[in-house]
Length: 260
Image (tube, rainbow, N blue to C red; front, side, top):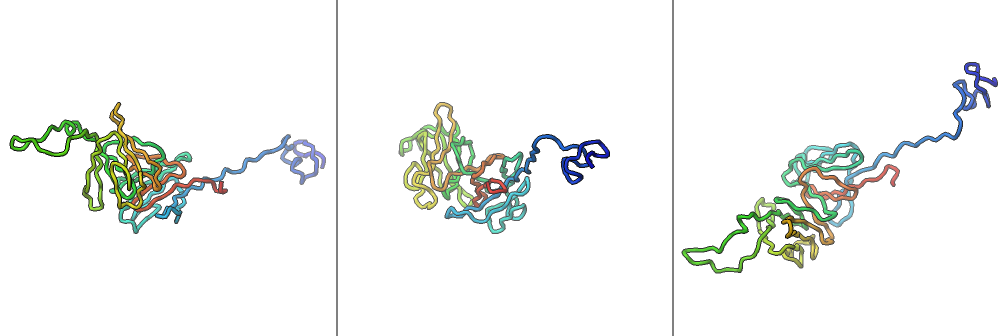
């Protein structure tokens, strides 16, 4: 047949020719078919103490809960992880982490300088330090007097902040009052030194006070293991970010199913 018996279209190559089928003439011009978009390949990778990647957990759902007893990722042997500790959410290709009111919080490694707020928890090496702003009432302390005699001691110095060392016993062990606008924490050098911490760098991190507005900030000084800050609310994660949950350190890897 040279023409379609239903619509009259010219048949070029017979009934088997796709351009001359009984369903009408073929569209003109080259045809382009968009391949299906590759599904993002996202996973949490456990990083060992030696810095090498270990087990990984694929993030196949838009919501992934992590806990010691409940959730999509269960860590039954980590006593510092809460029953349902944290939630990772994917929205429009972006990832967010939230602390589910856990006892020990969720820590994210700093990529840049971060603003500090009163009560923030900072993880430097193995040390968990609670940052507190000294109140105006404490700043105005006058020389102490006992039985009409002033107390003899070290000269007073301006105090604007303190770092309280949080221990596994649940109590504060040491309290540090930096007297300068910048306090360096390290294993060998700095205003606050932890000589027995093998995971702390020589000069690890710095807390700085802006004298113009009285705000405080935290930055990493190029340490080997990074400086971590406990999140206050939902926090967006970028590919490659490190998240500390209990004794587990995770890295967020995001790629494509085709390996790119």
